[in-house]
Image 1: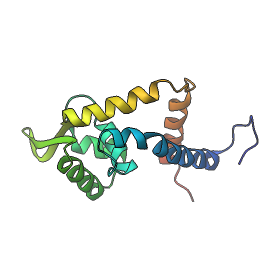
Image 2 (image 1 turned 60 degrees about the vertical axis):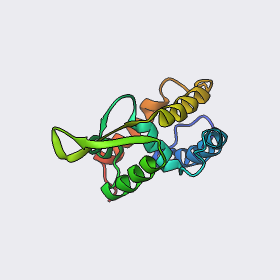
Image 3 (image 1 turned 45 degrees about the horizontal axis):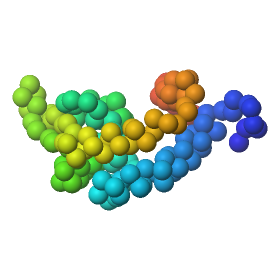
Length: 142
C-alpha cells in the first residue's frame, strides 16, 4: 500500500474499496436484522439500493451496475420472494422487466441511508471511485 498521505495507485484503491465493503457489511448488519433482512447478502443489498426511487428497468440496472444477467436474475428473484421489490413486465418492451421497492424494501433502504448520513465522506470520494471505474473500463490490463 502507498504510504500515508500519498495518492497510491489503482491497485491500492481496489484494496481499499474491498476493505471498505467488508466494513460496510459489518456496519449494516444490525440494520438488516432490525428489518428481518439478515439473509440478504451484501451484493444483493447493494443491488436493492441501486434500484433507486420509482421504477427501474432491469436492463438499465444490469448495464449501469455491470452485472452478469443471470446473477441479476437470481438477485431479483430473491429480493422479490423476500418481499423487498415488486417486479413486472415492461409494457413497452416485453423482454424487459420493471422493478421498484416495496414498502418493506423502501424502509430498509431508508434506514440504511439514514445510518450512513452521519458519515463524513470527502466530497470527491464518489467522483474518485467513478474515475477509477472509468479508467479501468477504458484501459484493460495487458
